[in-house]
Structure formats: C-alpha cells, structure tokens
Length: 572
Image (cartoon, rainbow, N blue to C red; front, side, top):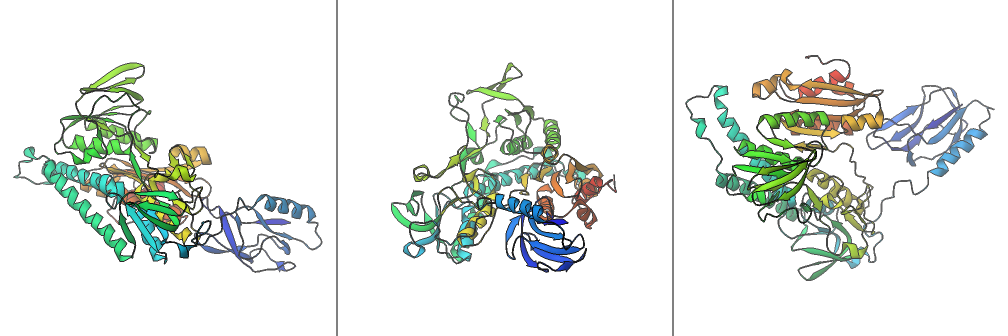
C-alpha cells in the first residue's frame, strides 16, 4: 500500500495545485504510469505512480491546492485493508484548516465600507518611490482607476537620496582611481598626480542623472494615465486620503511611504553638523578626514568613496563585524581590502559621545576617541509610517507596518510596501511588492517571494548575494556543500586589473538545490541576476555548472564555483 502525497519538487516549493487526475477510484495503475498532474508557481508536471496497484481512494479533486507532503490518494491491492490509512490521511487533511490555506483572491473593493463605484479611485498610492510608482503603474495596467500622491520628488529615497546619487558619487571616485592608475595600462604622457575630484562637477553630474530619471518616472505615470497629485498625503479613514486639504475616496490604499535616516539615542550627539546619508549627498567640498558611525551598506559605500577621494576614514561599528547581513567570509575579505586602502575599522564599538572635534566610543572595555570635525551618521534607516495609520488601527511591529505575503495590512483594503513594512529595505524589493499588491487588489492571487531577493554593495570589487549565507544554510539544512572560486584565477578579472575577491556558492547536499550565492568581484551586482534566475527556476548546481558561460568573463567564476561544489573546479 502507498499513501500518495503532494510531492515537493524543490526546497522552495511549499504547495501545489492538482490540475488533472489520469485515474479514478477503482482504476488499476502500473509503476511508472502517469497518475496525476500538478501545477506549481514554476511549472506543470505529470507525476508517475511508484508501484503497481489499484487507486483505492482519492482525497482531493482537480483544481484543489494543498501544501506539499499532504496525502492526496491511496494505492493498494484489491481487498487490502486501508481503513487505518484513510483515517490517518483524513486527520492530516483536517489539520490543514482554512486558516492555513492561501487566501482566495478578492475583488478590488473587498472588505471596504464603500463600493468601488462610489469612490474617486480604485487605488490610491501614497508615496512615489520605487515601490509606489511601480504599484501605481501596475494597477493602471490592470484597468484600475489609480492615483498617486508624492510630497517631494518621484523616485523616493532611492532615486533622490539613495541608490542613484550614491552610485553617481562612487562612479566619480572610480574614474579618479582609473585615472591615477592609467600608467599600468600603458598610458603615458599624462600627469595623473594632479588628478582630483571637483565636487561641483560631481554634484552637477549627479543632479543631471537624478533629474533625468525623475522626469522619466513622471512620464511613465502619465503614459499609464495615473492621476498625479503633488503634496503630502494622510490616511484619515479606511477609504479616505487627504492631500492639500482635498479629500479623496479610494476602494483600496497602498502605503509606500518609505523611510528616514536613523540617528543615535538622544544625548550622544552634541555636534550640530553631523552628516546623514541624505545630507552627505549635498557636500560641496571633500573633507580631509571623516568618521563614519555604522559599518552597514551605507557606511561602507561612503567609506570607500571618501577614502578613494583622498580622505582619512574611520568606521565605527557597534556589531562584531561590518556588513552583518553579508556572508561572514565575504565580509572579512571586504574588511581586509578596506583596511589596505587605509580605512580604520573599529568593530564591537559603542559610540558614547559625538562632539565638535571627536567621536568617542568604547571597545573591549576601553574608552577610545577619533579626532575629527566631520562625522557621518550611517546607522541605517527607519520605516516612515503615515499620519493616521495608528488611529485607523493598522498594526505595527518594531516601528514597521505588519503585512502578510500579499502585502495586506491588518485593515482590509489597505496595503503597505517597501521600506514602510520593513521586511527588506531595498528598492527592488519595494518594486516587486508594489506589483504584488496591485495584482491582489485587481483580483489576482499574487504572493511575494523573499527567498532569492538579491542585495548589492557598490564598492570595488562589488559585493552581491542572493539566498542564505553559509551560517544560515548550515543552521537550516545541516549538511550543505560549499563551492568557491578565487578571482585571481579568472582571466577577465586579471585583464581588467582587479583580481581580488571570491565567488562562493552554497547548495543542498542531497538534491543540489541552490541555497545561496555570494560574490565579491567585478560586475558582481550584474552577475548576481544569474543566481536569482536560477533559484527562482529551481535549477540545480549541476545545471549551472553545465550551462556554457562566455569566455573571458567574470561570470565564469560562478560556473567554476558550482563545479567546485560538485567536486572540483576545472580551472583551480
């Protein structure tokens, strides 16, 4: 006798839909014969019987969706006793209550106090950042009457005070370093000793790039017939938003209010001119020295920028290492390379006072001081929750709005995306969440997948990762395989003059599923998309190793790392 279950076809698969039974109760079935077909979020596949017998019992019908490993049928010989097995299977299915099942898609005005026809808009988006404007465009594409309110500039923190302007700064310092190192590439006759950054020109270029992209966002919204409302929006009711003293009714509301730069606890900062990740982007002159409080992504990118521009840089990090979310081995390589640039890094260090001339901190029980007039506060960002959310009863936790996998808040018809929900404070996460929220409002059943979202750090070499770190993978799966390939053995890296770094992959030992990919190399932030695609498609280590990569490219290091996970890199 065999109890047939919903198969788990990959470690990311949690549920499947039974689309067709090829046999009915009482039909004989032979081992290897197609028994049923299932649909996952990745594919459709026929599942074969694993033994000869007769289909004695079917537990679910066509079109039903249940989690993996739950029983769906019993195959046994004619006359074989199956009562106990049926009772056991029904008990398991009974435990799978409606609260465990995925929510059914709801119409646009589900749970609302008003019908969509009585509203000004089907969807009102508060915030025009990478989550908000994408949500508005997707909602409009799905035929929903959509409005978006933005109090400053479209593109949000990412485009105006984060991703884009910081990368413009970093590109300028990379150009400076390339100029200074030109002789190594055979370029002579140029006095590179006088090369330096002109911050006025750096700022002008940054503003031009930002301006073009902001204009592009507004153009996309207009093209998709989204109503643009400039001004600060407040949610004053489950279906009501006010902007500039005007009131708007909406069947559904999406909160995309972003985040704000954090500071240290009150009393520690006694200096009025401390820079934040926002204000540092408006610098008109480069400092000779600077202390950066915070060794996360923001702090490390700015440390690299200022050091590359010629400043003496110190980083003070409260935790035991810099870049806490990054794989520990990769983070240590980054620390070593930053130290080689002359950056002083203090970890397990608690800042106690910031004055006009120094940053004071405690490390290993000792009081220490960095003498500097310039301080950058880079201790992260905190979700911005719109006025009226608390009064409306929207649940929060840890300062962020609580949402489920479909981006729904505790109030029906109100969704929260991007930094406001605090799940993964990345621009591309916000955009993906915006699409999911809009599709659910339109009546689709979309669920956000956070398992393979990439992260990126734009120093040189770049850092990029997707999936689990080695530590997290070992904790979750126990037996894992690790594949590594150093970039000094990669031809393209040598040609480009920067062969520092490592490609590291982590796979599940039994099936070869990809658990994590971590890159510290040139072009890592572009190459990581290969890993994300592979993980979404549930590709295995063997499949990536067998996929032909162009030569010479840095991407070959990824293929080599997967070869290493399977038993040995070819070129190492």
